[in-house]
Image (cartoon, rainbow, N blue to C red; front, side):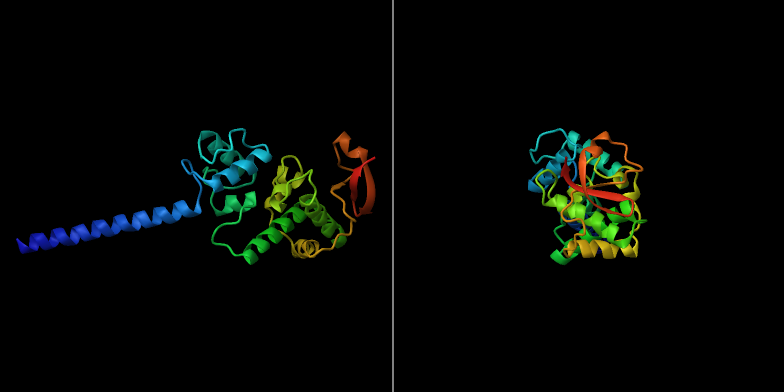
Length: 227
């Protein structure tokens, strides 16, 4: 009888330990990820970004429902991420949302890396100053009321950059482009404040010809405004 009771006690302890482990793991998962059923300000932040970028047309209500789920998956597909509808660290990074576990220094490093990816996708074949110039345009847009106010927001604004549309944004950045991103973030702007650039040989938009060029390097022309 004692052996039976002892066996039952050991079994009960094992079951409780497993349950406790599962609960703790689920709590950690819920604290670091946003998924269907999540609620709160962080959900509102994601909804706002997705709506600003044209992925979401629902209410900014802080409740993760079906419309948001479909929007997140669409965003993930567009940016080469796992299409699971879960806003984890990688999706947050693409959205320009700082994770709770990251320090300011880590956030800055993430911004530099994302900027270097954009420069690689858009200007890896350009002269070094031309690479810095592309980075400067992205940064200048974050300070302009006509554009989103974060590096990620500018880069992932629908239709803004060819490298995002064709997937080159996901390439591993070159060392030159990483350095160019650092120089741009540290204040070097060879363009003199430009917020547009284009390659006349490949540009397909008629609107681009309304821009007033102020600077040229390599294959790119740069502009602040229209004529």
